[in-house]
Length: 163
Image (cartoon, rainbow, N blue to C red):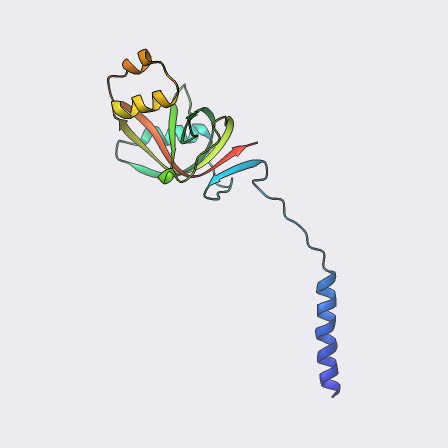
């Protein structure tokens, strides 16, 4: 009987002490960012210049997994279904969202972190005209698009936009 009371006392003590334990909330790493698509973190991201260097080493058909930070230049004003981000020396990358599974706000701006796959593509005239139309370019500007263009591109599965 004494053994049973001792075990019960021990269990009760553990329960009381664990009930008094104060839960400490960990700060949420991404709380200053709005998240779109898959949940991603800030850890392991490259800076813009690092991504620009990696793009420079890619050839058409190459694909690499990436997570990098940049600044938003432009967002599709119709739906937020694509965006253009800064690289270095005036270059930019076209960012689309995996399977059109999510969009970003049409007025998004500022710092962005994206994770997905990067590649270099030869964008057809038809697509260039489509994106120019989405961006609100004039008919004259769209008519001047007559050649395919080598483009740095990212298919993002997750995006964080700094608030």
